[in-house]
Image (cartoon, rainbow, N blue to C red; front, side):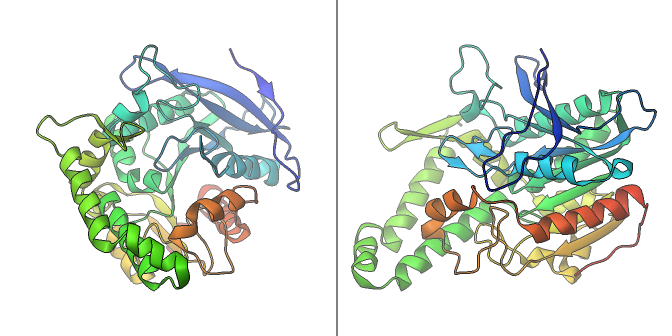
Length: 369
């Protein structure tokens, strides 16, 4: 059943004028349904002959729902982006947006499988994203030749696999790719990067807090815990998921194994042949921004029709800017605050300009900053 509702967003952000419809489509294995939201401008004429381009949002790692939120972290990335796109553009340049609950989150549940999210591997998530492209392409109001995929974090990392799968499914090739905070990255290196950041901050922390952390979380202990973790993940029985901390915490082992075997940069070079926009902030401690340097980016996607890259000075992984220092030890506190704020204005402006140029004006000239 489809329901149309007004977008709800917390003050002080203004109420966007949008039409949001709940949708659902079959999971890749056809064993349950995936639910999400399809956004159209409120003034969209259903009877008009003009087809709208569509953007599919593929969220980052973790149990994220259609809004980009996890049970313990409300970042409101997907819903804020969708609301911006459908409420701020002129009727002549309107775009529809779709986002969905990842398998095992929100309403995308499988009966009698409470561990559905933890059983999911990287390729399961890729397959579900391809099903979302199929759904969007089947909508009679959407121009199936102008579908853009926006990936944030892990969504950006698996982008080339989605593009490859779309073509193999017999669909029109993805028209454009937007990489937020993950272009050129892979999950294993990102995990190593974050572990090194934790160790560095603990090493440099002064006062009683620094002493306590160095006592309870020494570098040797962190390294030992990481080794034990990967030993469990790569156990001889190849478990779908593992339990930690006396069973209180679960982690998808299949997901980690598949990411560790995935050569993201090789896949980028082979499978990205569309227009691309990549943005990673200089204050993002979860992935590396160096891949968004022009001279690096062009080499990563040699088949791309165009590539535009940006490295905003204060942008964090949460798609908000931070004027102060960005520290991984403060991630929960900082991201909780950021989740209540609008998305970064520079990121939205860059994205709007790119959409105008590529989707509506047909500019195929590559640019980089």
